[in-house]
Image (tube, rainbow, N blue to C red; front, side, top):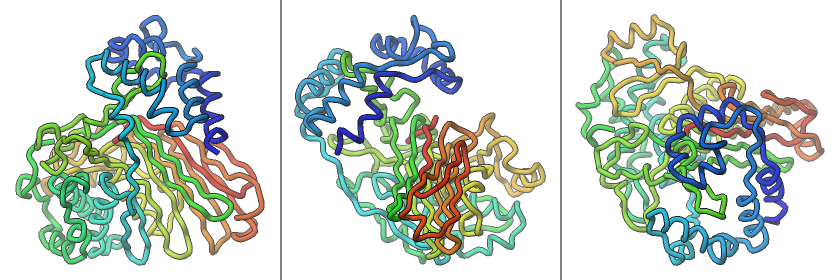
Length: 448
């Protein structure tokens, strides 16, 4: 029941949690925006400043809102006192919400995107999340190369060129399928990927300006991912986002509800970059009732022997992080390896290879630059991948949480899965226990 599921969240909102260094960094990043909203400042700051480490952040109004949701279900949020308070607060802040807007909202249930890469069944997010389509398009391009036999620089070069072309198609073609006709079958056709592959030189970067597409374009930064496997073998990959840290930094008084700023995921001006440098075209232009394009990529991988559940926050870099993890899975590695991989990224525009510090050896960077790539080493690492692997053949379940961020990897004791999968189940991450079912979850600092 919903009330039981929400009980821990209600308790956490009421009792609070101690502020840590990560919270302080995010609050400092959005300090002026939080100060601009009296209710957000009251809830998330202390006397208008970033709260000290250890200060307990309590959200009693949010607890009451969640209690209304637990008691009344949908009607506890989209109608009645909570809805009235939400609309009143938004309109007082200059917004346009109406009670009719909330009452009309419906969850859109869509079939996931499915495909294959070298015998691996891949199930991922469908539109308006771009993750599944872009992931599979990149994999189809790469399937024509013997990646495992290539030298490191050539391998990275080919991955970057696949990223470039798939993100170009994201910018040009993808949007809410209820509003635009998206050529999904074409984009996922191996013959189309072969045509893109034919335009890739092994020794030279393709300038993005030579690929037809949207004009110059980063995507959201406050996302959470959960990967779960239960004792019956049921699997969940769930990615949730309010986009930028603290979303819109606006809380309608009396609700405790922090509003998102997901409208940034639309192409407000086709060809112009959003907060994360992503460009979009007319397919993702704003329209009433339309849902914005996202990069969230909750994914299942299954080669018949090993089931993987993974996902991550990370804005526009989410899809390329899942790509790197998928290739690592295909190479036979496990979740501890996937979450710890050094990361690099290309998204068509800006025309540059972005890397984490130390992700690429200097010799590889030099080769890439000689091929014509612009390589930019960012001063930070990104993502917070959460992954679970069920190795049916070995009777092993593993869970891993990204060392970059806050999260938990856990394998819980019981009977069901252990009796089917075998006696040896392990976890990797911040907690180890005797196992049965596995989960990995973590909040992120990059959304979309």
